[in-house]
Length: 304
Ligand code: AMP
Ligand code: MG
Image (cartoon, rainbow, N blue to C red; front, side, top):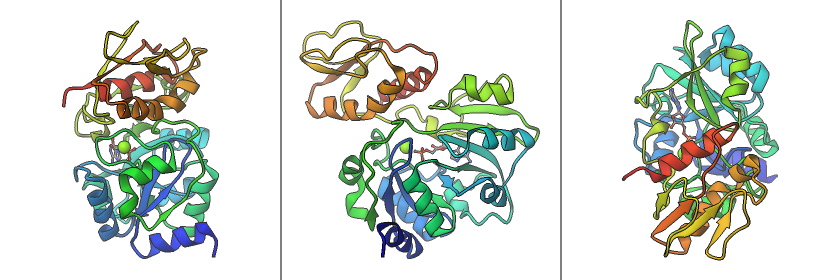
């Protein structure tokens, strides 16, 4: 039996699987099995009101779970497969367990492009509910080793495909029944790219509509000091557009935002592991994927 087949078998029996996607590592379960979803929440230590993204094979599979407004369909056609999650009205006969949608009338759907994720979804044949493979409140795992560190004892299989190519969670856009599009979470598909399809986007106001926007999400143990041009005594420093200093790391020596996104969580974990009480982070420009990097940093820095 192939590794993928074995992992699909774990999903069929209600177990959990760590698997790679282009964004970050996910911990997945059978989205149609409420008991498996409950086990997943328990493993993550995730608040139950935080809904999960259902990963499906293609647009047709997504349309079996949600009613997609033409604007949502246009987004799917433009950006799937890829790092975009679309929130739309859940169909009454959706196969996805209500628990996975946290009882909301909406559902979040995504078609990833990562070949291992696609192979697993194809082998399993049903939607896979998968949040990031980290314990709730910790930074997302961008390697299988980090995922195992957080969740290893609770999973039945691990698919390892090296470091996550993008390194940040998916962009989330909700499209209402009337076609109104709202950016719920920034990501590698940038606001500018989404707006070429939807026109000007509203930005979510941090309501429970998007619980991924909980303030202290994605948090290391150290405190973060943002937009820091230089470190102070005793701080670990995360540079950008400059080489790594003696007491720190650089997100990208050349100032490349895509490289910075890919390094963000691994570097936060590494600096956290030094035991420094504060991680000072260089200013990151807000354009392109920089918006998503700044968003995750702001959450990691939020009081908790
Ligand atoms: P994660 O699985 O860690 O990438 O987080 C998934 C995020 O998707 C959640 O924290 C929510 O913000 C978002 N999400 C999932 N389903 C919905 C939904 N029905 N409505 C709004 N946001 C959703
Ligand atoms: Mg997460």
